Image 1 (spheres, rainbow, N blue to C red):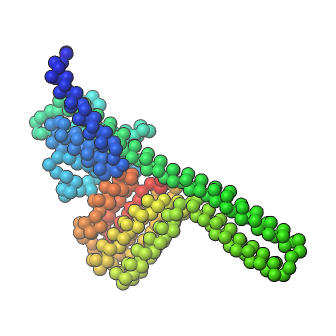
Image 2 (tube, rainbow, N blue to C red):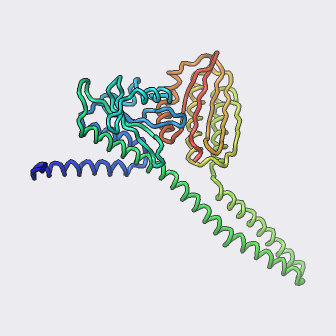
Image 3 (tube, rainbow, N blue to C red):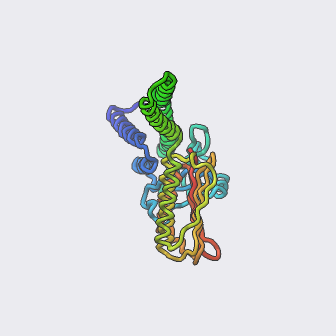
Length: 364
């Protein structure tokens, strides 16, 4: 079927507008910006009344991270919403396969699966039509396209994060090599020459001056080698240790007692970005505990493995209102951010009283 010039022009304008939108989205470096833009873009170009995007957590659970439509993620019905792995398996088993899409038989929602570059399921994009209305072939195809672009965006942003860290590490290694070859080695050579001069027979005054110079060279050489060691490893260990120390000292003032702190693993494996995020989470958790003033003890445990960096804040004391505590620490926002980094964050009550906050991210 051929199109008239007017229809062709209209179609081209729509394609140009869609391309501009997708190009703008792909320029985003923050998934917290890009994914809501994709959801809103699909909503604006179709008859769908709600579009949501969820990401797969390492546990296999799915967390809602973007929502476009009458409700937003701030809506209590959707804030921090998680579909556990078992519930997703049950939904996938019951869903009706319609082409490349799944249809939830209970709600009629169409679901597009998003796969990463390695072929793994990394998320879902779901779209709902008004009750009693079926999506057209065009709307289904657009859902598939937008889900594909969401998967590409997730892969790109995550790859860029890893790439930036690799570039920084390579630059540190280059700087360390330069310091070693151009500074440390020359200092060592100069010290050898001065030591050789001492054997030639010099006056006591000259010997004293040479000895003083050698002492200075030795001190400078030690500092240079220390600088080389520090820049060839991630500076985060000091930052993490100092951050935890600052947070616990502040907690001593606000809580009236010092939290107990334990560590496991090598802190040198924590990059600076993760260290800063961990400190922020810890400060929020301790501040919320201090405000309620119901804790009798607090245990902070930081665990670092080759796979993950995990923080636990365990509070013992009176029973905790989880809804109020979640609001105080901004749990929904923490969960959204940590999900984008492929991590997890949870808050649970302890018996007979107290709470436990768990936060973990991949050790990238």
